[in-house]
Amino acid sequence: MTRVDGRHEDALRPIRITTDFIEFAEGSCLIECGSTKVLCCASVEERVPPHVAEGCGWVTAEYSMLPRANRQRSRRDIDKLKLSGRSAEIQRLIGRSLRAAVDREKLGPRTITVDCDVLQGDGGTRTASVTGGFIALALACKKLMAEGILTENPVKHYVAGISAGIVGETALLDLCYEEDSRAEVDLNCVMDDNLAIIELQGTGEGRSFTVDEQQTLVQLCRKGLAELIEKEKEIVGEL
Image (tube, rainbow, N blue to C red; front, side):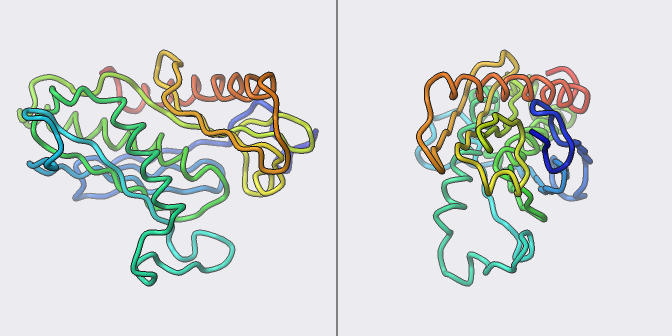
């Protein structure tokens, strides 16, 4: 199958990550996956929600798309007086994925909130948010160590996310919007640096799919995530 951008079936889109994109955030990056662009900022607060165990920290995320992130303008969530169901579901995914990267006892009684704002969407915004969000989180923790606030790095795993899908009966890695909009099957995968699964979301958009097809997509994601995690290591350095 010839892809719209000429990539091989198992190839990632071009990735560009610009760190320290925002001056005031403890950690930030702009992640660009093809034409998808997400700004990720990690902010540290010296308090935790009431449900967090004594002495432990918390990691959470917020996600939104700017009005012209897509081909047509969308309304801001604040205009609707509540978070859209899609945004709420995605930010819970990002939060769960990032918490899996952190030893919350080593983080101590503080909260890191990772804001993921989609500047331009061309498929894969949630998985780009996980990857960029991890980088922002890791940079924030390194800053806390450099300032002597933390004595040990609470980040225990690299974490990244990617999508795969079946389009025209062909399994493809890292779908752009044109592919994603035609996908019969869509799968989002988050893994750590051991390439163990943290989160797996698979949906039969146009038809049901078999366990063998699911495993084919997972293996495609595994290949892409190994490449993304190597890129994270180049940017963040050793944990």
